[in-house]
Length: 107
Image (cartoon, rainbow, N blue to C red; front, top):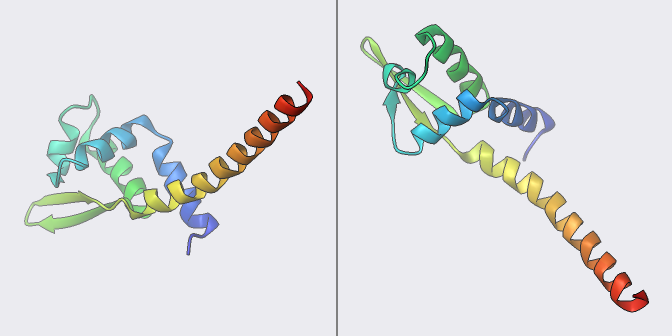
């Protein structure tokens, strides 16, 4: 079951372009924090803060391996958010269909 808190954490995590870029990179597979930090002009601690937000939202899992930490994507919270958005998409499609019928009938 999706709770408001789950949705809040997911949408909050997805609201930042850096975090979206980190998730996009993780779709290609696991990566270390260092590998994830490479393309960004920011410190590793800043990347770690972004990863913490993603981890709290359940979108990233971090696994320590010696001195390194591997990160992997868990997209389940995004699916829950997409399902939530989809309900509203269906609502608006119904509204637009009703408007189209009205315009065809009275137009």
